Image 1 (cartoon, helix red, strand yellow):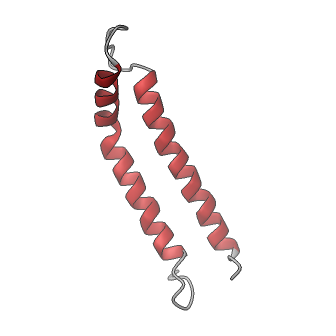
Image 2 (cartoon, helix red, strand yellow):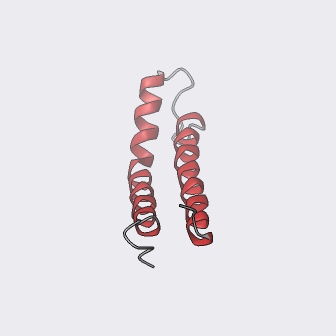
Image 3 (cartoon, rainbow, N blue to C red):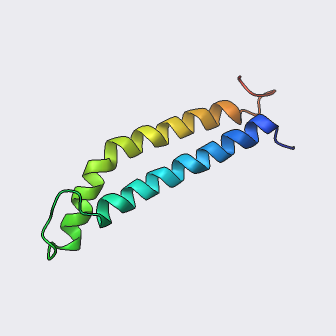
Length: 80
């Protein structure tokens, strides 16, 4: 089954959103926006970075899932 132009666009948007999630998580861990000491353990940096981005990451992942389920519904066509 070939994807429509709309579905291809949604897929590109979902991939962009997923890349944004991973980029923001990586930035929060590496950029040290909270001013942790340079010798702070990696576990502390990971915990703080993930806690700071968790809400945003969950919201964006949920939105990607909702849009994807609506655009790729193979029950007779798209819901849109």
